[in-house]
Length: 288
Image 1 (cartoon, rainbow, N blue to C red):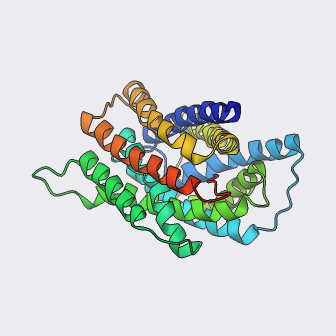
Image 2: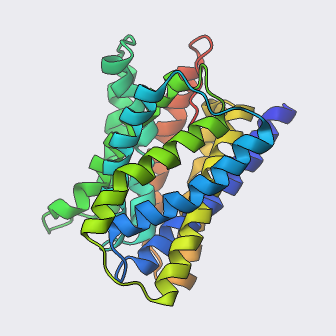
Image 3: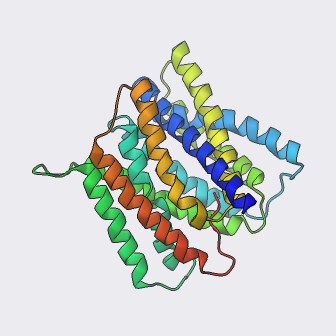
């Protein structure tokens, strides 16, 4: 019970940190290229991850370099889509739709990890998609294709979530963070150079801050899932939407409509049910 409570505390810390990250990215994105955000942010996070590995005496050797590389490839694409979306959509809207990631991960596991399929998975997906429709408010207007980008990003991130489930069998959280930030820096570096644009002091400070937030997100989410299973943590994910909305109001002068909270509740309910069902499987835990 105490470990579960510690996990909840760490998830709350992650929710706040991730919400701040989304809003800072939205704030700097009009003046900074997406791959400058990804590359420089990960470089800062990489340096901090090195210190984390050395402090924990975890060692740098891994037997999962191919898996780490594939995961980073997927999540670099997913992050690019998400950060682009943040430049045109409110952070709270993006955060709500990104709650779909664990739901998609459960379905992707059928294909990647050869897990047995069940009708419940499809019902959970439908519930999550209902939440997305509520958030996007189609009403009498047609949903713009760009509004569907966070769904695509969630699907891509779900691939990374399934890959990381394999990595956690032999790599501790700090080593996973080390290889993620290292490889994503290397992958995004040539693209950043190609699209390089001059940075003002405000943009540079913002990128360094984003790097710190990248690292803190790795630390807090890994500690959360190391203390408690997803079935315990999932209901508290909705706090991320609340934090994102409050921070967005002060940082970007934005506040979402009631539809975002209603849709977010649908999605988090789907995540919670998915977590409950997955917890019934012996020894199964999501870790990031």
